[in-house]
Figure 1 (tube, rainbow, N blue to C red):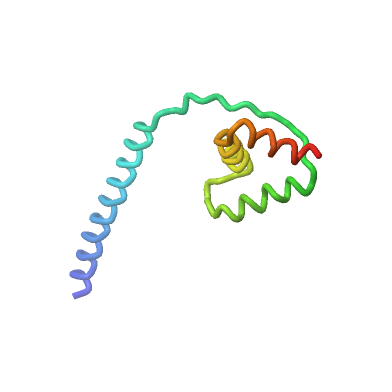
Figure 2: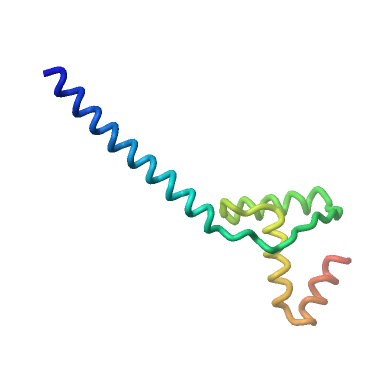
Length: 98
């Protein structure tokens, strides 16, 4: 009776090994199909007050997007500013200058 149990475990092990191999080979194919990004990213440095830096961090947390980072928050803000009319943009900038 003990030998029958060993045979069944060996068959299940082979089945599991086959599933693992299929998963690994499938992921290798998917990775090969990924395209490399053609975008070139450059680092820029600019100064922020502690308050503005905290506000960016707060927006990052409030966004609840796992892949977001500080750069994404700034890009989102930039996109929203680009949607403003020239007059509204001027008013928004003037309110920050004063």
